[in-house]
Length: 446
Image (cartoon, rainbow, N blue to C red; front, side, top):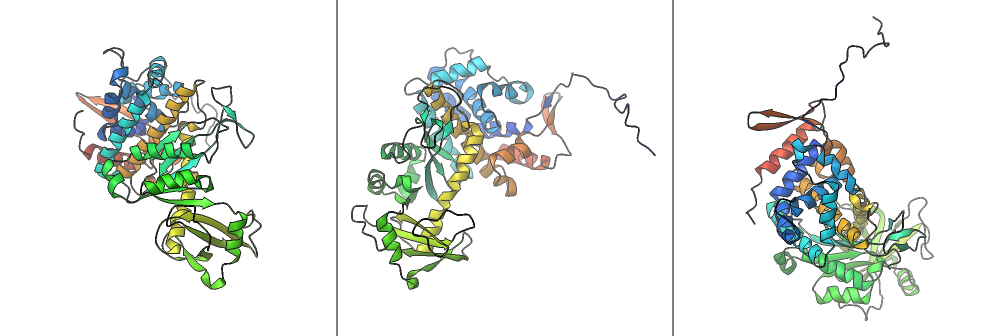
């Protein structure tokens, strides 16, 4: 039999009356989880004073929809139309003009702080449901965001670009975005006042009993090696682990390490790492907080690695300072975990931070905060509703596998059903995720 390719579509009926279709069916999972952890109610309560009239859209629901849009892959205000066009699934979604008015109201003095308080309240609820990490490790880092047009406080940066230089803080284990500060492009990465402000904002996001009882650890790269920041952490009973530059004093201390003083480094599974060793430096640290230790790690450099003057015979040396107690290999393993923040930054730029859309600096500050909420929403979804590979997936992969699933809205009497495409390999995983969210207890009314 030969297939006649010409005229193959002559008997295919094409029409534009596909009612009840949903192309972003998985994104409804984020809306459902936001309601279950009390995020929608907390935002509504926090932003109640900004509501102009009772007939208007609830500002909390508008902010929630904006965060879902960012988690779904949107990067500008107009992308809210992807939710608005699916009214059967997402209900009444605000127009672009209404959403802008909500963002503009958040620019008023003190309103953004109320939004952060709503975030903290919903975080406590999410942790009660099982999203709390075992260890509270705060990773601090700055990143560059390019501005492609003239925007308020956009400046040239140290890499020759133009835009902004925000400072951000994440929880390592749960990938929650605790706090962020939008800054001009020429802001320094080692500005201690900004670092302290971001750590303060991050601590305010944690439940009070966690701050009082849990052992807290703050990790940064060498930009965090400032007396003001480390003294602030030490006085607050917070442990630190920060990178150190290879200054001349550090180089001389590394050269004085005897071969017998090097101990084997370990990997995340507790096994010995090949060609990797750690040792403690005999370095004068009198001016730093009490209990500070300088620890050096040496390992075989990978091909193409940039080696400093101290690196010899193919060994690469890196030094960090900490006030933690414990075995050298364990402290080194814990500090190496700070490298995961590069993934956090990359994923954050996939959730609204690739390009700040507004000209006004205050509005872009609000946009950054919405991106943090969207990252939290994805983190809670993975910890409370997903399993195995999906619970470890990055936002972009999660969108392609779950959030952008197609479905059809079917109504039968008073019942409304979302029928997913059966041939999609992740359809059953999405059904199971909806069931887990539905099984979560409803939050108490505000």
